[in-house]
Amino acid sequence: MGAYLFKRVLATIPVMLFVAIFIFLLLRLTPGDPAAMIAGDFANDQQIAEIRERLGLELPLWKQFGIWFGDVLRFELGQSFYYKKEVSELIRTRIEPTFSLSLMTIVLTVIIAVPMGTLAAYKQGSWFDRIIMGFSVLGFSVPVFVIGYALIYIFSVQLGWLPVQGYQRIGDGIGGWAYRLILPSVALSVIFVAFIARMTRTSVLEVLGEDYIRTARAKGQTETKVLMRHALRNAAVPIVTVIGLAIAILIGGVVVTESVFTIPGLGLLTVEAVLNRDFPTIQAVILFFSVIYVLINLLIDISYTFLDPRIRY
Amino acid sequence: MAIAAQSPFRQTLRRMFGNTSVRVGGTIALLILLMGLFAPFLGTRDPSDISPRNRNKTPGYEAMVRDYDGNKIPVVYRMGSDTLGRDVYSRVVYGARTSLIVGAAVAFLAIAVGLGLGLVAGYFRVADGIIMRVMDGMMAIPAILLAIAVVSLFSAGLTSVIVAIVVAEVPRVVRLVRSVVLSIREEPYVEAAITAGTPAPLLLVRHVLPNTVAPLIVQGTFIVASAIIVEAILSFLGIGIPPEIPTWGNIMAEGRQVFQLFPHNILYPGVVLALTVLSVNMLGDGLRDTLDPRFAKRV
Image 1: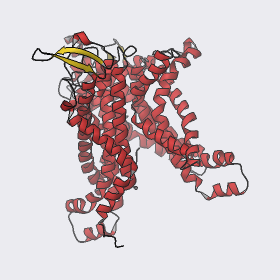
Image 2: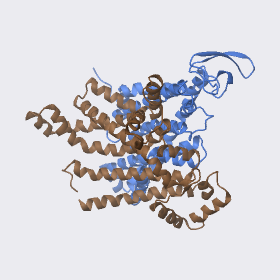
Image 3: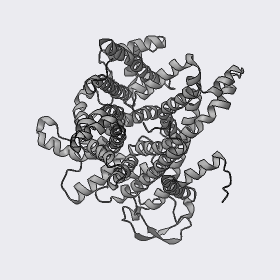
Image 4: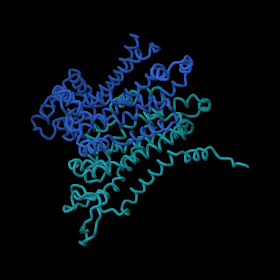
């Protein structure tokens, strides 16, 4: 177990290193002066000279990478010339809304998608199964911003039940926080539900064909117990794996959803940074999201030993 | 009754066109393709022709508009007009062109690049380690962010959007092709060819490449769908195709400010976009079930 953990953690290092190199090269290998690009349109010559000095642009490329990577490890992500702030500070203030939205979406998805997929598998071929599968293809095809605007139009503009946009910090009251997150997280969870329900159905279907399910039924176990205790528990590993992989979709969706609902999180920060050609921020946010994505999948890999005692490394 | 012997190719075709998903998805996709091709003949106007007097009109509004020769002609705004008085219907119809070009170009380029890299990675052990580590690293950056990163470096335009989405899609193609090559190279006929001294390039082209065709057709279809969505997202966020070119994402981006009063700017392109992606996804699902149940996966 200890050896496996060590190996698994070690295996993420080349991936992370590549991500860092890619994001580093993004700016260096494109035509133009990286210092001028980092400084943005609002900088004067002196600022550009300072940046050139700090990045060590006269040094060989690998030394430049060393300087940049050292800074990143110390969470010194440079200055945003557009926001006139440290990028690390920007990320700190923007993380709460993104985290809230993602958490709410994942919780909502699991609550809806897992029972849906399990039931669809249980009633394979029935009208319920067909509806779920049809919804799954549909949910995968309707972009999140179309869903978002449809929901805003129905529930905010027409019915007036929920706010059109905006975010309230959790520190300012949990009620308002949750109230404002309902529409965005529902919009974002549609594609997620479509995906997870489909995967749950597939893995539960596979398990339902196993001998121990027949045994459980033969000994008179209720169908609910068969599904919950025997089928779902054994299908958990592939479901959790897929949730981990779908974090990539979630992150992409967060960028769009925050933009639609004007939630001041990291996704909106990304879009603003690109619109203002604020390169230190773009680099930092992409690096940050990628690290989170890799770490979540690392944790999920490790969690298998707890989910399924048969897995021993 | 004697049944005429059918070639395996014909059997596959029969199975393909007998599939409901393929029929329905294919028909809708074909209609949208035709809509893009014949955009000028579908009762459309110049999609960038602005009309300050007819701004923000609701669907079905009728007005007299001067054409380029100065003659007054009657115009029906079937899907309303946007904040500049442009005809949303014409913009939606012409917008199909951008989406289809992006979808087709991305699928073609991503498969061309991914096929090359995947064949090399799957067949040559030395290259495998390097190529796959790079692909793992690229897959660690969520696709939309990767596309955003690439787009942010270049000036906005069709080419940079296509390149950005290709970069994000290539790793998945490489993985798919590599997995096909890894399983095929164990086949007796490949081993026989190796024993017979077939040079590696010839072996790859003659014996391995044909096996990748079916999974790549399926994967290519899904790439078209995802490229259309990503292009729409980039344009909607204002970092994709420049706003003067009508694309579904751009029409929605321009409609955002007045959305609460005039939802038609977002409704119509949104529905057409969703329908297009849905039809392509259905086509892909059907093709996967009939062409190749083994390799193609959605993840």
